[in-house]
Length: 217
Image 1 (cartoon, helix red, strand yellow):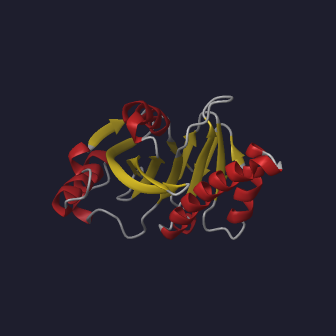
Image 2 (spheres, rainbow, N blue to C red):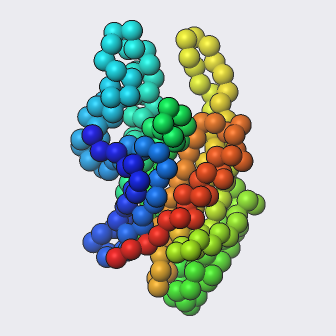
């Protein structure tokens, strides 16, 4: 079982020698490569580690396992390079949240704009506005000590069924588009949590993680 207790790293598109984007993750996180055939086995192991193997915990294991498997499958379908699931934000405190990291191979800015973060992220924001991307009205520039970011956020209503009853859950999605240093490329870090009613508190948490991220060789 692989966990990211302090630092989670992803090197998207290693064949293109893209700098590695690293995150300092608070608490305990499950770290997976969603493209790996062993991902399902890793999920099963971590669920048993968290919930236990007792017969009376079967329902809790199934719920957590199904949730993690759906998240990993979504990351794989989106061609994500890395997936991190929060197991505990602090000892004994669980916060359902995930982080997926993408390096869109075809998403590069035009040659004329240069490679400065302001130019790259400005062109990205303009393209989002032109395309009418959901959440573009929330677009905000963030500057960390070692990274330049464009943040978008949205709330999504999900219909869920549990025990024969249907309910609506509000999901929070926060996108952090990182300008890759000295290039026209961007990397996307997507945080998702079903606790949309805690939007501001969770966004502050995600901001702290994103602003502390850095690119390394």
